[in-house]
Image 1 (cartoon, protein in one colour):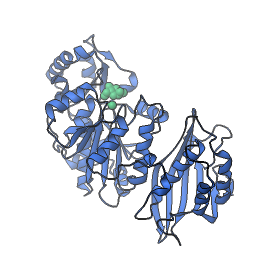
Image 2 (cartoon, helix red, strand yellow):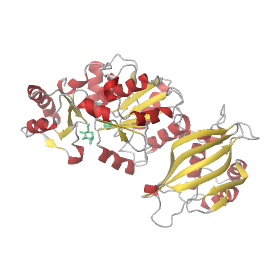
Image 3 (cartoon, helix red, strand yellow):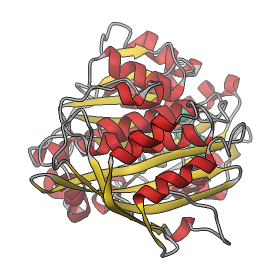
Length: 456
Ligand code: GLC
Ligand code: MG
């Protein structure tokens, strides 16, 4: 048992020399500059069976997390995905599941770090990992072990060699591989995950080391997040829980190998919990448990018009509006004129909607036309979510909010880059902000193939 987690036993310090790792600073800086001060919360989450529940075809817990993040955290916090997947399989998952866009993506078990929407690689990290590593030697030695089955070509990365191996063989193979790779001058970390995957990485790699490296970079800029919550379910996540000062959640459905690791090495750490809830619902539970900030997803609020806010909150308005829109089309709210009247009341009389097809409409007319689409998606797999909701205050009483609005109907998924102008002129916090302009453009890779139906 101990040997295949050998790389994760010692708590991590900060073993990195800043001057050695100064490349890709500009993309990191962009990530940091979005935040005027230290992030309130940095969530570092594994994807498969942690953020993403592969046993929930409706993706409800993921959608709940998304709404919570966009309404309450996006503009002052950092979302980091840390996955065992290669960039190829990561991008496939993004097409399959309604995932948000993270600020930082850590792939291939902490061996590849990228920043922002364009996923710019951190070359300093790559250089650091070259120490005492030679993947040719790794493949030479592993080819002598018949119990190891090579994973697909996409999962073999510059600093990660991956295999399948049966549970009962994992310990012995890990031990003998460690010895022989050491004899050949390498310093490696061998990690067993999900009761089947065996990854070989440079000793300095891993999800935890990658996070410690990011922490160091943020610290150097005086922007260490106020809190970090790490989230995982399997062996390659154990590393995350060893980073100093983090809160951690093992989701309820965590794998045996992670629970065993926890029982041996971290049982008395009050900053790590084993959630009662599965996957993303477990992450939400942990946010509440550790008091890291709001932990009620707008998706769990039945009557959104009841919500009392302390201040004008443009991100919350956007999340709320699109939740209402989903519920209206699913007939999950009452078919009441009152809702439409309320909606009209928060749209400026002269408000304009620019449809992605280039047609301009009055916002009030759009609200009227919602009447005929009540319940038109009832009983169907129809979901709406927003991503990267980022408001900028552009005047004493106005905000420009940019976001991606996604809509999935059956197998088809569409997305519009959306800009909305919201105003607080002449209204109270209780009235809510007034929508003055909504302008949409098809996202390049997610526009319609033919004439699509698209309301908002
Ligand atoms: C992901 C990767 C795989 C790796 C596993 C465990 O499934 O695709 O290569 O072995 O995570 O880290
Ligand atoms: Mg996982």
